[in-house]
Length: 80
Image (tube, rainbow, N blue to C red; front, side, top):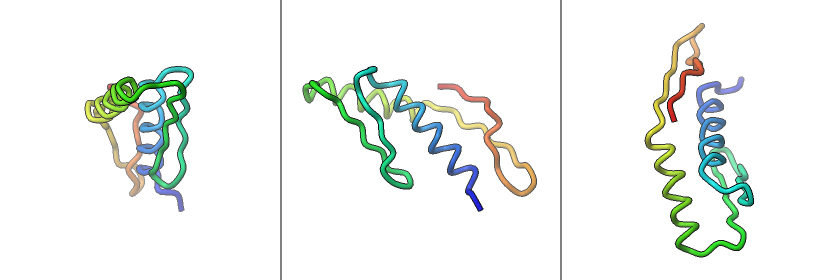
């Protein structure tokens, strides 16, 4: 059985990461909850700033969950 809260959280994290990198950067999910971001032709300072933006995007995310039929489900009300 799929863990719906975890799947929702991982999908939301993927969206946050993609919104906080440039169009030339690549975000990959490589494991259960592990991601890799490739920053081509990017210096350490610029990559560090992008990583900070991703962390800020995650840290400031408001998560709304509601219980349905014994499972917690994302109700789609997000604030990034």
